[in-house]
Image 1 (tube, rainbow, N blue to C red):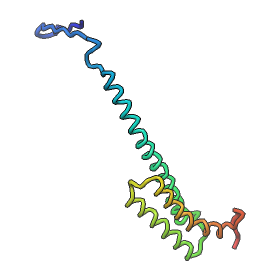
Image 2 (image 1 turned 60 degrees about the horizontal axis):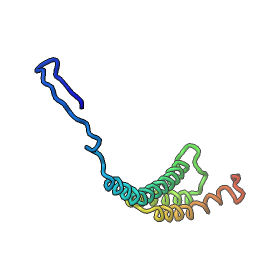
Image 3 (image 1 turned 45 degrees about the horizontal axis):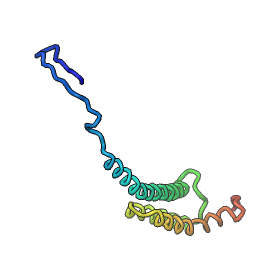
Length: 134
């Protein structure tokens, strides 16, 4: 039993009994909440995986874009620069239009982008990874 008394004003007093059975979840409520959390776990995992893959694609696109425009930009031919720039722009537009894409869709888009830039980068750096001199 808890008692509260207004000492500054009216002098009113109220009592409140705290009971362990009040405001407690029933066993059924607890089981239901556990079932729901397990049900939503799969969805949460799916969304987390898709977001992680989206971030990887976005990072690849913006990283490539900065290498095209930055101070230490890739020494690409005009044709290759246009191809890469078009692929970056198309990828960013696709991401903007497909914010709720699945992990697989993001992975497919990443592979498609890589299939465009990898041959250009291989030509730029040679097959052994060292930069070729002109």
